[in-house]
Length: 359
Image 1 (cartoon, rainbow, N blue to C red):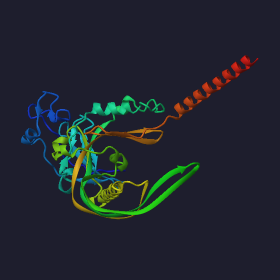
Image 2: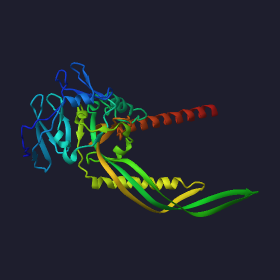
Image 3: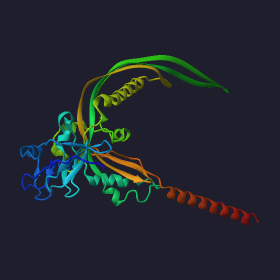
Image 4: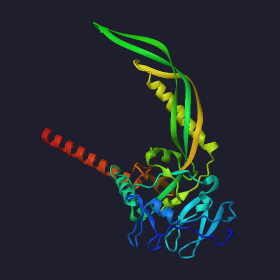
């Protein structure tokens, strides 16, 4: 049987300075708005009232070697169980945000955050839009039940500033064709072209959590870093959050690969005036200048269909979204059957008309 160490550690939330009711961050306003007294507060005002503080949490280990922690909801006193990577969650009894601030302290403390700019209604609209142009999407995929599962989540990212330098060699060809009378000529000139230089990269993002597919996270980029601010746990109100479980020494490998590929591509694009350009050799050196740990906003839902999970994700700042959607085999069969029937009837009619007119 799985066991969890249980202590009366308290989960934290943000309180309205005016009426002390739970208060959430409103992405449209860029402020905290109380749904009970309609008061609005800026980040400086929230800091002034010191809405939440950190408490040390004791860990327990379950039988499957997964680490869990026990908290007490600050509002209703119910017990909240969270795994080792959850930094903000919801109380299943009263629904209030439970900010597990100790998860984002020490080496896990983010330096920056991009607050949500899009609300859940924006994510729902984008999710519903997926059915347009997808006639074979299962009818129940975009259901109210699945729509309600769409959740705002702060995902941990490593942001890298890198410098790349090096050179490439490319085999290039100039191909010229012409005709004289009925004779066609082709002239091919081959060249060896080199390019060298350096490039500066700022804030290359790498997903710091193993829970989320890197391909999906890469697809909803870019984020506008001009709207990134210093981290404050008050921004987590009303959203879920994760702490990283991919160390920077591992995450930087992806950043270096991206910088390497981009450098080669830019150098190749500078070779113009040729019919074909094929990179035959490269020597690129990428160095890290600095990195920082940030939380970036994503609206997300995982939908299970035929024992497989499909993910919808939307950039919580820009609205860019991606979704890997299932195909209904039933709809494909009905569509194919209908097309076959229409074609068969058309052939029969044409044959009949030809027979009648021929007679």
